[in-house]
Length: 244
Ligand code: ADP
Image (cartoon, rainbow, N blue to C red):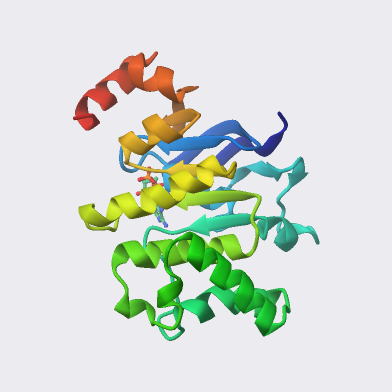
């Protein structure tokens, strides 16, 4: 199957820290790839570089073979093919759930309100939150906010979804409802790159795991093989600490 994302020789530095150190990997269409590793290993920075939220010092990201370059005229168009789900949801507090979902459809894509509402309601139904469409985000639980954020991303028909620790800010009892939505998306064939500490999710849903440390890939492996029989000592140590 063809690559949807290629990350080539990516380096991102903050002052004297190499957050991402000459990193390369590919993601195929339909694949679920989890980026895992200790805190500060560069996982979020990689994801943010892919989505253009950070500008790398060196290297490039390609989407369907086309380079993501802010200087090129197709840059926003390419970025719009990616959905990004943040740890802290990033919903607009002064807008209702429905308005949060329709905003980019009406303002960026100039869609008629009626059509935008129809699409938004369809995705709210899929994440089980249609009854909350007229609520403001502060009336929702963390798990519900994140499900709304996922629905909002899906409204723009992304070809790939990027998740940056989507359950880390949630109370434990709300983690499962968000993981279930993600699992459903995976089943439907969505390509996903997921930065996560949820080892259960990575083990059961991911096709492939990329284990990072100090901004470098320490091990890249089939998810099942990674958890059952990690190749590197560093990954073995890490798994001993995080698997209960
Ligand atoms: P992870 O997602 O694996 O926890 P990050 O990508 O968030 O790791 O961070 C990698 C390294 O880059 C860490 O040392 C972190 O402190 C540093 N870093 C990340 N973002 C910034 C920033 N905006 N300014 C300075 N340093 C940063």
